[in-house]
Length: 66
Image 1 (spheres, one colour):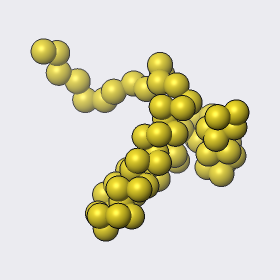
Image 2 (spheres, one colour):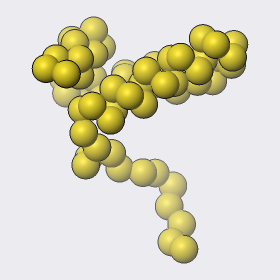
Image 3 (cartoon, one colour):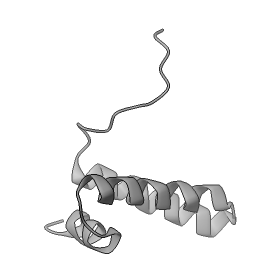
Image 4 (cartoon, one colour):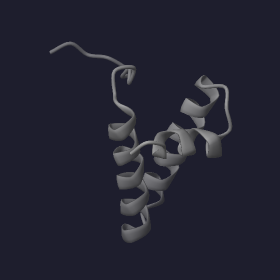
């Protein structure tokens, strides 16, 4: 197996990304494990920066047309 430090998400669909973010949010809130919420927040932050938009606009984009 090849080892790697980072994983690219360039091929993940909008719907799959939204499901991942919602799952992290749900799990964090229902288990009181802050690491899940921090991970969700970090993913949203990084992706919104890559898209050159606000986090709120990015989340609206993911929710659009679903």
